Each structure stands twice: as structure tokens, then as C-alpha cells.
Image (cartoon, rainbow, N blue to C red):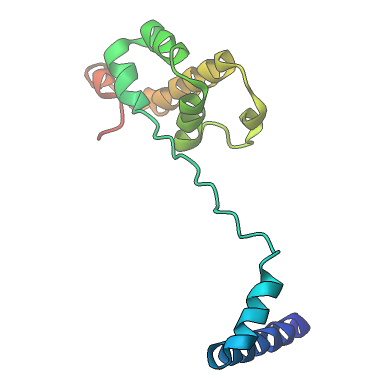
Length: 135
């Protein structure tokens, strides 16, 4: 590792010397430009579109179980993947290779159902309506 740091410092020093000489000597700057011209320009990095996941707890509350699954089935694959990622429904990350939306619908609905049932033994009858996380 030390050797890499030393080499990096050395190359930076050479680059500074070359840049200084190019500023002072126009003929050298032209030769440097001609030597560098065939090199390809750096490609701009692609920016990933960040897919925002809808609030599935709110949707489940308003739609109910059956209509919620139907609503999920109507979403596109990137949105379903964003829901899984945002809610941490697939800790093993096995769903990364999936291409079938039905698998995502099943995973999301089962995981949501499991999360909503957590602590259900401690919830009284009147508290069941408020079994959703507070927003």
C-alpha cells in the first residue's frame, strides 16, 4: 500500500511540472495537446434514476388485502423493486434476479402481512384498527 501512495505522489508531481511547463511554453502546450488528442474523452457517468416507493402501509389500509394485491399487480417492475428495497423485505437479496412481477407481489404482500401481525398478541380488540405504523 505504501508503494502505491508513493507512486501516486510521484505521478501527481510530474503532472504538476508538465502543467506548469505547458502554461509557460506555448510550443510545449501544442505538442502536449497533440499527444493527448487521440485519447478518448472520459465518458460521463450514467445517473441511475431513483425510484421512489409508494407508502404501502397507507395503500393497504385504504384498499384492503385483495384490492391491495390487485393494485400491486398493476405497478411496474422498477416500482415493485423499489418497494422491496425501501422496506427491507428481501434481506437475502434473492429478488434481484427476479423478472416476474407476480413474485414481487407475493413477497410484498406476505412481508407486509407479517409485519402488521407483529405484536398482534398484545393488541386489544379496539386497537386492531390502529395496527399500522404512525406517519
